[in-house]
Image (tube, rainbow, N blue to C red):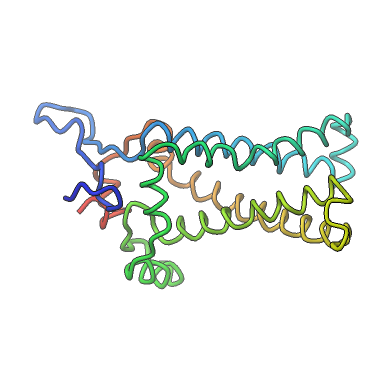
Length: 217
């Protein structure tokens, strides 16, 4: 097991492995900064999507009311959405996690092929190919949402781009993001041990060997 910052096996030290331990053996998966960035980004994303729903769906807008307040929360939560990630870059540990997310290995292609065939046991490093694709999608979509949102907020910002075009891109991309985020939440809901890792920083060694063998092997 190597200890390089960019390695899938970095930081995977077993915990609670004494012979008399009744607790399942655990391994450290996430440090405090990555978990804080994930949690903060998640809450900001929830605010953005929730307020967007209140603005675009009539029946929901009537129930919630306070349209000006909803608009303000939507705008400022959108502006703040990239902030947790940018602050996280100050952490060496978080930067190492981003390197893992941005690195696609040969076994990631195999993971995707087996996922299409609905094979449960698939080769994965610390992050599987689905998680890497999700991270890439969100990282690319958020700046576009921020840019088109600013064009809608400040109509004269770039006069050569019609406001109607910004609204079109913003609305349809918001629907796509909502669908992807719901899928992400669904996958997390189906795997309580993975959620435990994001909540506490530690996962069961047996789970890690099953779901992320290339990381723990």
